[in-house]
Length: 218
Image (tube, rainbow, N blue to C red; front, side, top):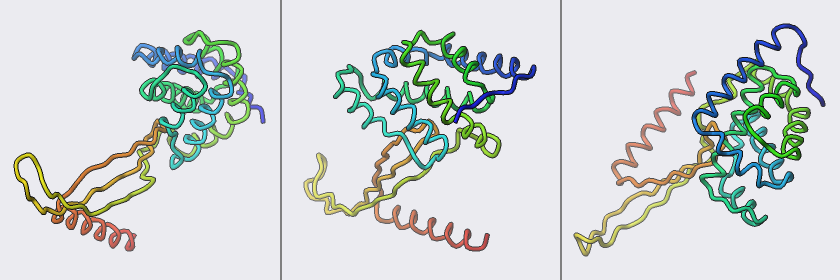
């Protein structure tokens, strides 16, 4: 499904606004992500774009930057998780900004080529993805913000026992390890791990019960 923007005078205004925002993004240093984009085979770059689009359509679907990094490395691309994270941020911003201003494919590609010196194959991937998904994202933009708050994907906890430390040979102190899996607004899936004492965890659990009870009355 191709997306064709309106051809009235507002198109030039939105194109200018999008270009200005892309310039601000470049000034922040995100243009460095284009170096990695140039190295990615078209099929892998298309996979990254599709995951970013899916995240923008459904915030609960995050982009697993670690898995993408492993796939890129397996394809012979010399990169790391930090560089992959920058590319995810840039691509997600690109499509969310395009949807915000309801850009046509032509205006989007002009904006991209004016800020990123990308190979023709990479530009063709962006063209294809936007032709297929642009209208859907623009429709979503009409009803909600495309950069939502982080979404909690999973919550796990377990009880452990601290039996020794540098300062004390025998602690026998129970604690709770909590692991959260969170999809951030950029699409990155982050795992956050922290420990709490038993009293802290009991207070934490009590707060959840209070929230649950409050929601039942909404």
